[in-house]
Structures are given as C-alpha cells and as structure tokens.
Amino acid sequence: MHRLRVADYFFVPELPVSVFSMPAQGAMGLHRHEFAELTIITGGTASHVTAQGRYPITAGDVFFIPPEHPHGFADTRGLSLSNVLFLP
Image (cartoon, rainbow, N blue to C red; front, side):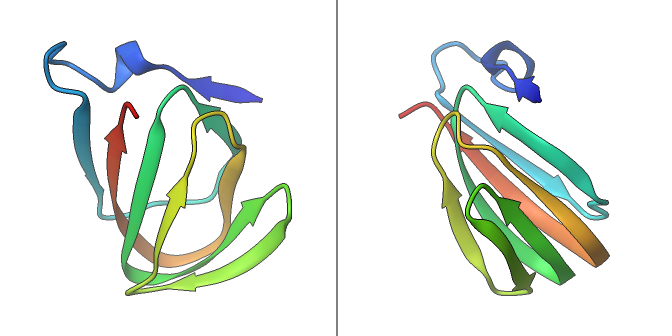
C-alpha cells in the first residue's frame, strides 16, 4: 500500500497545514498518509473506500481521515475535491 509522506506535501516547516485543490480526481487505490486529512467534495460523485467498506460521496460531503488510516476512491464521476492536510 502506498504511503504519502509529510516531506512531499508540507513545504514550509513552520506551517503544519497544506491545502490542495483537485479539480479532476480520478480513481485512487488504497493509500495512507503520515498526516491527517480533511476532505471537502466540491463536485461529482465517487465511492470512498475504507477498511470498513465503500461509501457513496457527492458534492457537499466533508470527511476526516486520521493519520495512517487506509482509504481511496473508486467509481469516480466528475469528482473534484479540496484536501486540507495537517499535522495534528
């Protein structure tokens, strides 16, 4: 399973927050990260895949992923989102 690392997403050492806009998020297999993630779905639909199952997501949904918890996206249809990444 792919692991996203702090060094690849946090570019200012004094600032423990990074924000990324993904206007065209495709399917993404299970992965985990060293940091926490707050995801805001801004458009489209998909299935959010976690260890507990698959859940439909759509514009307006917001969810939190703690560090090291595997998740991914499947069945993406016009999915766009913003990720607020932070070091708890």
